[in-house]
Length: 148
Length: 148
DNA sequence: AAATTTTTGTAAAAAAGTGTAAAAAATTGC
DNA sequence: GCAATTTTTTACACTTTTTTACAAAAATTT
Image 1 (cartoon, helix red, strand yellow):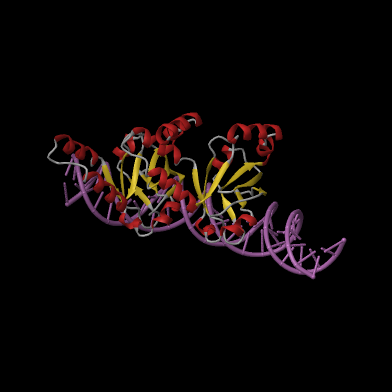
Image 2 (cartoon, protein in one colour; image 1 turned 180 degrees about the vertical axis):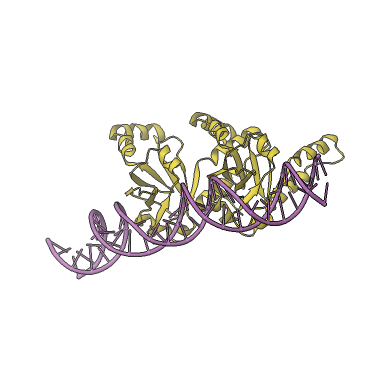
């Protein structure tokens, strides 16, 4: 099981590519060649990135909870599988090319940040990320509410 | 189970590295090569450091209690996994390299102190630590209030 | 089919990170 | 207490990663 830990900045080049951080690359092993699924995060203004393998596992778990003879389930599945892309880091530099619609949807222009979240990686516009951090008090309150 | 005991000073070199104390290194065994997770402490102005193994155990326990289709759970996980880094002491000297954002966030510039806290290690800016120590009277009063 | 746009690939410069060596300081053993 | 060992500090060399710039190939449009 791969755990992504740490935050790494990256610049978007003139063709919309960004280098996947070397530290993450190093722990991926063979998963690297299978690529990653990138999609918009559900609640936050960022993208999320799964190894192909972990995406497969997660999406199967979701699918197993749905009934495709149910209208809403069918609509949910359509939305859930929308606006995704499969990316594979290139050989020499480890760059990934994310469609500009996805980058634009979360406000990524020049500076992006890869954030390790254990089982997934989030990709943020640097400015949005800075604005998103919780205060200590908010975090404690949230922890209490969530786990308390 | 590893218990870290004692306090050790360390200087930050020009590349932001500091040597992990030999006394701690000695009791880590194979855990050393797997590295440590360093993150900002919740209530105090210092960093905390867990063996990778103990971090993994803890974070999996937390994750297992979350539902990522719940908005607050999703926010909590983001905060919980923020401002972390994975460090591995280097072969020859046992130095660890902590991102300057983390060092700066707790005011570490030149002199740091590693403080053993049994299950974890705290890393303080020397000046902050001196200023933080409780007086004997305050400690006694707090003990009475907490456990008495 | 030619020209343009888009995508993908290569190369070199800059920046960041990692490793080596030796001097200084601290610790340990005698 | 002094010598020997280990650890820590300092300084610098080297490697890797990232950035920038540009070239080749593929796809699309005119």
